[in-house]
Length: 173
Image (cartoon, rainbow, N blue to C red; front, side, top):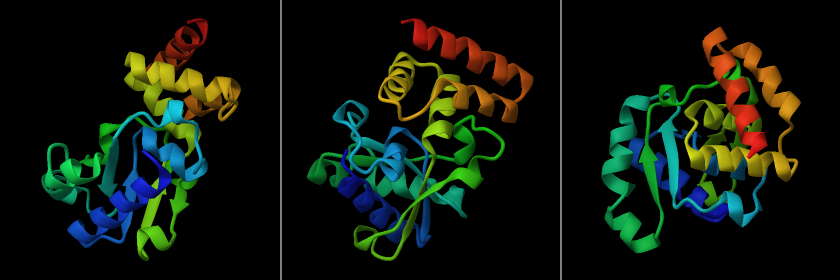
């Protein structure tokens, strides 16, 4: 997915939900900080999004522009409406959100997870594709291991331990 495609999803999500601000939680959030991110990070055709102030409207996004929708069929990419609590995030993640606002968002505002918060979320999720994604972020020097570890202090003790274990596994592969 490209930055332009993400902006299209933000614009459509805002129109569907009547919410100006849309949160981007999944891997496509990298496009907030790195509009020209490498293709290896942009494989997914799905953007995980949530109306910032009305997460209960996420189902509307799925119904209108979600997987197997006419939108998906027409454009080749889609949105997955999710609740923010679906992702495990450090305590102060909202303070690090990265805005996307351009002519492509038609006056609406996308809020993307910072690369560090995205990395933490993916490590906690722990799927192989998430581990590969974080490894790529580190190899490309888009995030640093020490910075990821520092965000462990914003997690519960159990989550912090899991983060450190998964980061070690991620870097040893």
